[in-house]
Image (spheres, rainbow, N blue to C red):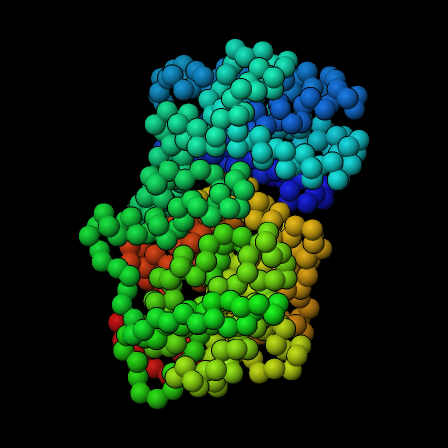
Length: 521
C-alpha cells in the first residue's frame, strides 16, 4: 500500500499513507484470526484517534479554501463514523456480537476512507497545494499528533474542533500517557502473533516501559524514550540473568571525526584473547541516523568480540538532524581509516580488518567499502550487514506486511528519513545510501558479505534484494533469514536464541575471512 506518485518522507500525504498501511496490516491480523484481538483493537484505536485528530486540525480545514468542500464534508462524516465505532469497541470485548459487528464496520468504513484519500483527495490536494506546502503540513501533522487526545470523542462537533479543544493543546506531551487509561503498557508491543515466544517477551518488555511513539516526537524527546537495549535488560532482570557479557576490556577514546571535530570510539577486547595481534572488526550502530548510540549496541559488540576473538571498534558518529547526511557516513569512513592506522597500537592486525553493522550501520558498512574502493584504499576482509537499509525508497512487500512491526514500523522509518535528509533530500539517492542502485561493477568490489534479515521488519525486502544483487555480481554472499523475530533482535543474545545464532554466524563469517579458528563457546 503506497501512494501512486512520488513524495518526500515528511510530506503530509506520505505520513498519512504510512498510518494507513499500519492500520491495514493490523486489520489483516484480525481477519486472519491471529494475535491478541484486544491489544490489536486498542492499538488501532490509538492510531486512528491520533490520525483523525491531526487530519481534522491540520488538513481538512484547508480543503474548502482550495475548492474541496465536498471532499471535506465526506471525510469529516467518515471520521465521525469511525469515532463512534471506536467508542463501541472500547466498551465491548472480543467475541461479543456488538464488538465483532463494530469491528467489521470499522474495517469497511476505514478502507473506503483510505481509498478515497489515497486515490482521489490527496493527489488532488497535492496538485492544488504544491510540494512545499505538503512538507510544512507534514510538520504540523506530527505536531498535532503530539498534542492529540488519545480517546475518540464522537460527540464533539466536527466543525470548529480545533477551537473546541484548544485548551487541551496547551497541556504537556506526557498527558498522552495518562489518557491511555492504563493501556499504555501494551501500546508499543507487537500483538500480531507472528513472533516467537522469546521475541514476544522482548517486545512486551519494551512496551511495559511505556514509551511514547518515537515517530511523533521531536528527536530530543525520542532519544529519551526506552530503547531496544532497555527491553533486553528488563527481560534479563526478570529472568535473573546477569549482564553485560564480560569481555577483556572496554576503552573509550576520542578521535577526529569527519568534520574537523572529535568523536568517541569504544574499543572492546575479547575475554579470552589468543596470543599475537588480533583481528579487528569495525561495528557500526543503528538508529536511523537519528536515534541511539554506542551504548544501545553495547551487547552486540561484546558478543562479537568474544565469539570472533577480535577487537571491536564502535564509532559514536554524529547524528541528524544536528548533523544531516553525509555526516554519519563521513564519520564512519574516518573511524575505519583511523582503525587501520592505529590497529597495531590497539593490539590488532591491520591486515585482518572487517566491517559491519546493524540497520543503518548495515548501510554504512558497504558504503564505506565503496568509498575505500573509489579512493584506491585497501578493502576490509569481510562485511556483515544485519537487517540493513539499502535504499531510501519504500521497497518491497515488507513495507506492507511489516508496516506495523515493532520496534521499527513504517511511520518511524519515514520519520528517521525526514530528519536524516533534512534540507538534503537528494541525499537519499546518493550511492552511499541507495545501495540497490549500484552498478554490477560497484557491487563486484564488495568483499565476502553476510546479509542477515528477519520476518517482522520493514527493511527485510531491501536487505534480501541487496543480497541477491551481490550474488548476481559474483560476490561470495551468504543470506540468513530469521523467522519470528523483529528488527533490532541481533543484540538480544542473552535472552533470544536467534540472536545468539546470528552473532555466531557473523563471527564465523569474519573469522573465515581472517583465516583463524572460531572461538569456542
